[in-house]
Length: 355
Image (cartoon, rainbow, N blue to C red; front, side, top):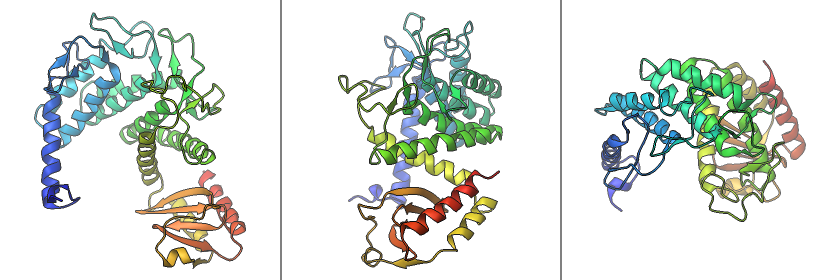
C-alpha cells in the first residue's frame, strides 16, 4: 500500500492537504448571482437548470468558514455570497423562516423544513465565528425561528415539516432533521455561549440511544407524531431521497461522531460531575474474564448495553448483565453481575440529572 494512504504518515498528511485544497478550489463557482448555491458538474460548471437548495447554500458557507481558518484564499468572499443568499433570496420575508429551495425561475418550493433551518443555524454560527458583519444577526434570526416553529420543549425533540405559511404541521417526525439539529446546536452553543443548546442535544441523544437500543442498535429513522417508531415508513418507496425505508448506516456514523462531540464538550475532565462519576466507578470491583485475556471486544449476546460514557479517549459501555467494555476490553463487575451494574447506573443517572 502506498504511504499516502496510511494514516498519519508524512505522505498521508500531504495527500490530505492537497485533496482538501482541490475540493475547496472546486467549489468556487457555487454562488448564483443572488448568493444561493448552484449544483456543480464534474468540471465545476454550475448547473443553472436545477433548483438551488437552501441547505446546500448553508453547507457551502460552512465549508468556506473552515476554509478561512485553513487559510484558503477567497473563502471570505464565498462566505459573503452565501450569507447574501440566506439573507435575501432564500429568506421568506412575508412568513418568516427559509424556503427549502429556489427554482431556476426565481420561485420557491412550498414548504418549511426543520432540516433546512438546522443548516441555517450551522451556517450562521460559522459566519458569526468568521466575523461576517451579518453573521450574528443571521444566527439570532435562525435560532428565534427554530425555537418558535420547530423545537418542542416537552418532547425534547424537533418536528419536521410545515407548510410555507407555518400554519399546517405535517404529522411526520424524523431523526434526520434532529441529527442535523444536534450538529447545529453544538455549533450555536460554542459560538453564543448559551448552554441550553448543548443541553437540548443531550435530550435528543438520550432518545436516539434508547430507540436504537430497542431496535438491535439499528437507529429507526421515521416516527409518528407521538414519536412512535414507524419501521414500515416508505417501504413502497425505499429510495426516497430524504425518507428512505429502513435504517441508514451512514447516519449511524454521523450519530457516533455527534454523540462523541457532545460528550467531550459536556463532560470535561475538570467538571464536578466527571469527578463524581469517577468516584462512583471506584466504589465497585472489576475482574478479568476469558474475553479480557483473549483481547475480545465483543460482549456476550445476553448482555444489553445500557449506558455509554466517554472518559478522555476511552469509552465505557455498561451492560445490564454486569459485563462492561472499557478501552475495547471486556470485564465483569463484582460477583453479583447485573445487580451491581443497575445500582451503579442508578447512581450515575442521579448525578447526570442533578443541577
